Image 1: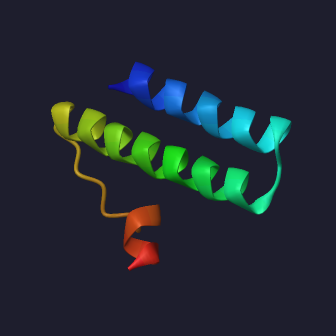
Image 2: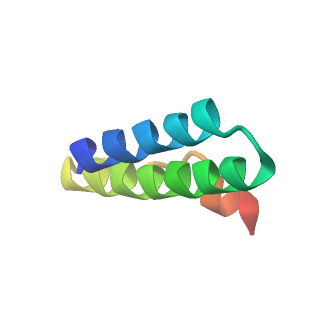
Length: 60
């Protein structure tokens, strides 16, 4: 799970670094949200449940 999250974060960085326009930033945020989901799953697998607000919760 952590590896998939890292890949998504790299994609987000690439979007912002190479394009940097509004659409690229939106795509980067999608990658960051996906990475966050995978990291939350990784925490759950470790028996840890995050009580911190997440990006997804803030978007609601």
